[in-house]
Length: 396
Image (cartoon, rainbow, N blue to C red; front, side, top):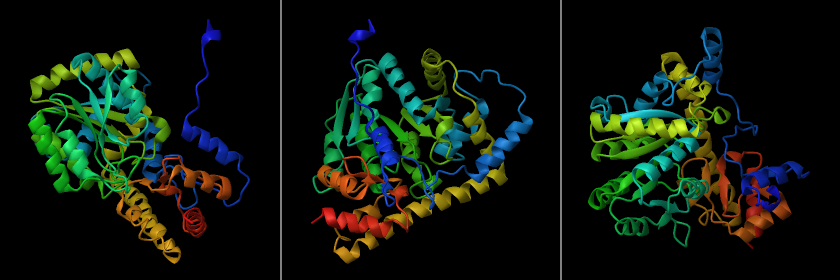
């Protein structure tokens, strides 16, 4: 039977990783893979995570199941982290947390919930969006549609986005990036989020907020502006949260699906259905990552350490953005790439064409996906001069 199965092309980013490993150029630069890197090019384990794991190892007494919704101790720290301490949504008992295998797992839970409980509703994503969005929702049987996000000049197309949202059929689902838009790095201002809120209200649209980079844009609370605004002003909101980046626990697969309902009773109805979706997908989520997050956020000392480390990571990325533009100034390209300094998060839609990306790889051993999306964490003070010279060469 297997003889009829065809081989499909491998993941583009995984292919870049393999090509980068085989490249013998000592000046090679990896701007493809989506993980944070320090100045030495490493993805370190955060000090707060190490300390939390030591406490877990010392105090752990069981490896039993934690339930389809995960560990309640995890949910009780993630909800205020995302929705805010003293949130009126939490005070009203309107929000439910379901621990998931990463932010991707939370998205799949959301997709299956929409497919089974809101049949016939389409999901609208930004153009462009995180490539895995394009696979997750159709895999659940959902029709995926797009709204504009970036224009031909590689700038945020907010007018086009807003006009498109106003045409979406009532009741459909709109996927929105809370901050650090992946892959573009272009985020909405607070005023723009207010305008989006009004359209969501008017069109009776259900927002699905992908919140994968809390703390990587402007700060933990600042980055949570959009999900908090929507949750406090709309009856129903779905939020998918990830701890991979801000806790640096990529391989622990730790995320959360947050369902916000009109009232506490409706929340319990929704929560019961999400439990079934989780049960049918993977039964119980992995426990270790959630235990790390819970240990940190239940400790004032560990929370303070974690906050300091996250600030260091965020500041490093934002500094590298500015230094990248500065490095291009001698070549007269600083204005052309000024938007890189304005973007937020780990990724930048650089504006490089697929042909330029190919030349950077073939001639200079600089690796990124052909859309021109670069992982800014791959920049360093050591490689920026080389990177700027290469970009100038392919801009001739």
